Length: 124
Image 1 (cartoon, rainbow, N blue to C red):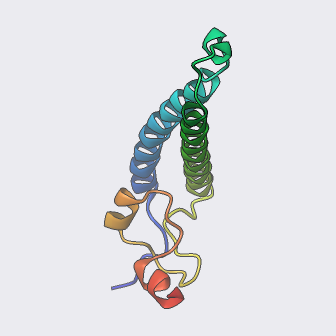
Image 2: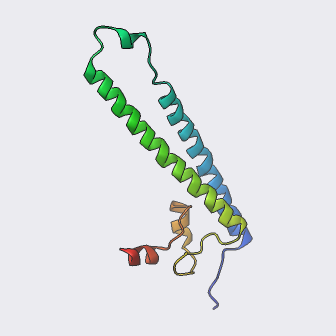
Image 3: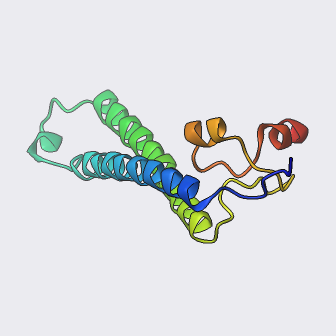
């Protein structure tokens, strides 16, 4: 039996739907994170004599954590968009190191994957 070199158009469409669902959720989460960062402004409580340095430090730490989460989410969104481009080019699901098809199970779990498990293990 001949080994498949790419996924069929029907299979690619299935992956496109999966990625679009994940992309919509990721974008909604990113917007929530952005709103959390934007909502942490200065107000009249900042001028209160009881405002403590520890509270300010905790707020700064929280803002940094939310910012880090937003950056990770944006990277995830970019990876999903790149996967959609690979679907359009019909190169989706092909390991960029081995040239073999990445198993469907892996792509369902990590739809933006560009490496097979075999290739990832070789990198270690």
